[in-house]
Length: 129
Image (cartoon, rainbow, N blue to C red):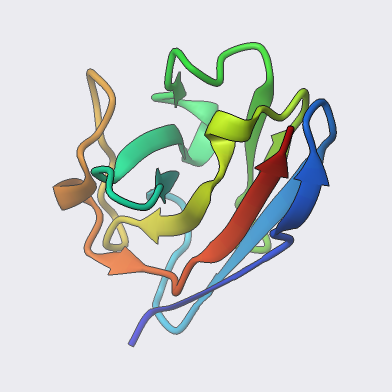
């Protein structure tokens, strides 16, 4: 059973920063897998924010966060982080961490939510103007 535990959400004023973390446990994640951050605002569809695979490959950012957010993966600790700078009110959403099955590596364009079978419970990010 795979478990993903997110932390680091909160409330911040526009222009501020937050750092989200996600720890994965419960399965045999060693050398090959991908992780991602998605977000969902009230009344809106879930959207991909950033993705990365082990070795730093298949790195993607949503256009809306490029230059402001940085995703990183610590393979040894199975920990994913998202550094969010210059936050805007439109970044307000529930942020979810997701991971592929062990041994799965994604290629090509920004992966879809369906590519990730395991999800965390979400952490709320609220940015006020």
